[in-house]
Amino acid sequence: MTTPIFQLALDRFSIDEAINIAKAAEKEVDWLEIGTSLVKEFGMESVRAFRRVFPDKILLADTKTIDNAIYEAKIAYEAGADIITVMGCGPKVTIELVAEEARKRRKDYMIDLLNTTLDCQKELRDAFSDAVFCLHTSKDVQEHGGKKAAANISWQGRRLATAGGIKKETIGAIAAQLAPEVYIIGGAITKQKDPLAAVKTLRSIVEHTA
Image (cartoon, rainbow, N blue to C red; front, top):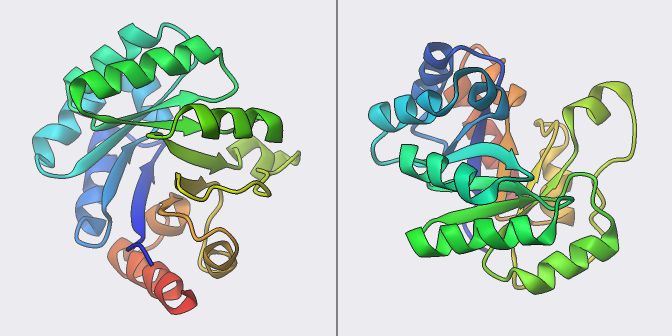
């Protein structure tokens, strides 16, 4: 079994609040996500701030790029991101351009599969062998209902992440059914009094499910 990667998703905070939570959980999380809300509210300064504080940590900027690929990839990577996200439901050329920028810079990219069909997922899986693919149940779907992320195609040979409402009550089933490489977790860590202990609990469940 590949050692699971825990990605801490930081959204709807100030930059300082997000950094403080990241510091509290740093020893047990592998990747730090500068969430879409931070990117939208504070721009690339949020990424630069995280890079200053965490010079050796893998940083993902959740840009959710769906157009203007070269520009968005350039500014995010140059601000210090190791990984950016691109929407799988967007134009294929946009994904291709993000992939090209990532490869050129020896960086990674994640394809967010939010609102994609199974046929689209198969096409993306076959076309982008070096991507990280994220099965994602959106915040709005979690809170207001709607179609959850589909998972019934084979992701063998691909890097898979999962995101959206993961908590200690559900992570064991996710580990058993999907066995993703990357677990993207927000509130189950950020809303806890002891973020470090929360990550340890989640990691223990995954390790004991394998």
